[in-house]
Length: 258
Length: 321
Image (cartoon, rainbow over all chains, first blue to last red; front, side, top):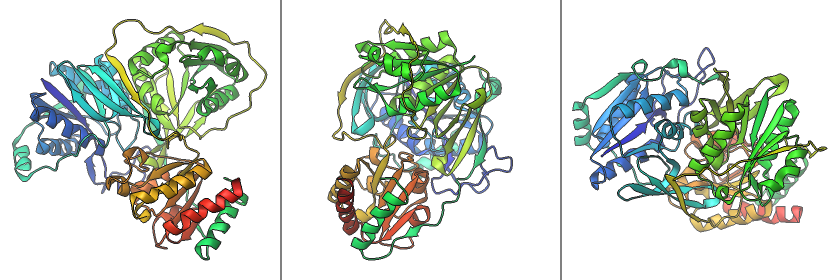
């Protein structure tokens, strides 16, 4: 059975963000793009499913500007994914259109057992595509998952919620599962893996050939702003005891937060 | 007149603070207000909802709603919203809200903005802003369709007003969806912590490498107890296995904006700073006077966190008790 893994390319976490000229996005010049960190857990889990015989085929799928998407898909292939699909699309599609396009592309591939995603992408942090994808495909979902146990027609997953509480959830397959850190330890691509990945063909689909389109966009991020400059830090001098006493006083009388 | 529907979370018979924040904003807008509350005891909320100006309450006072199940909740809430077609839906960015509302947005073909930090409903308009790249910048959200717009607001960003007067709130029942479920909650394993989640905490005490070893996080727990705070951590100590990932603050952990953030022994990697720089007041304690964390801090103490933290605990105890 096929397992799909949805991945996104995001600016590396060390990236310094600059606002684009029109104010409606970031300046991508010089940005180092990486696979969304949570998606790495999803890719690893999909490959482990195949290795343990719970799936026959891992298909990585991504949406965005072709060149950038292909690079991330190559990484997934190098880690061990069998096939890759790139949905060539514009820069700033919203979660709704993204999920709709992914659903259409996955449906076109026939039956599937499971779809793995990261719990959220660290660029817009909307944490929306996994749940929307599940709704569009009419299957159950669970996100923020740090453990998966497999049975024939279902999976049992652990979802982390507030205060370290864990919910144990049983999903009838097929299902969409959003991976959290802790699910597994993603492997690095091996050199033979990288060589093999270079030879694989990435299937390219133009977004306008899918049952969706830019007309479906519901939201757009606009008017980007950098955070206001903070006033300079007030360094509190003196030994630890004196400084701490002074800090308590400032927090109470000046900042009025305690 | 357009309608705002507030998804109101509650616990122990009381509306959560995050729900009061949303209701206060809705009340000030002058629009018609609906509220949805699900779970045993929901009917007991009618008076509180009336005091916050709710015109119509959709209450699912049913044990089937006591444990969040995305399938059950998306059907129940989705059906109310599909029938009522409000212009705006407000929900809190809790674990529940973040999970549920994207699915509902897909169901309703609605636009959604998650984890918003600014909301303005004045003059019938809807203006929201949210952090992008974990707070390295912010963006406004344009809704391109005239359909329902769903706003999931981060807690602690809006003021809570006082209960006022009393609307005569019309009450409607929300039935639990019937039929076989593909999603079953088998068990809920309670965490050790009774404290608020990082995303809802008003005060956060975070530790990094400067805490030297996992056992020293006990010092942060003690400080947090005195302040009524929640303990967080840097990625470095989470990756080192000192504390679980749900404590991680930063771009690959939780983005937080409490009133007071205390960073103990955290140097301030860019991805950590992105996740906490929206905090109102930041206190940094670090041995290295050149640590990047001081660039974002309101107050700084150059010193050993292991020495300063216990002193802070003692000092705050004197002040607060």
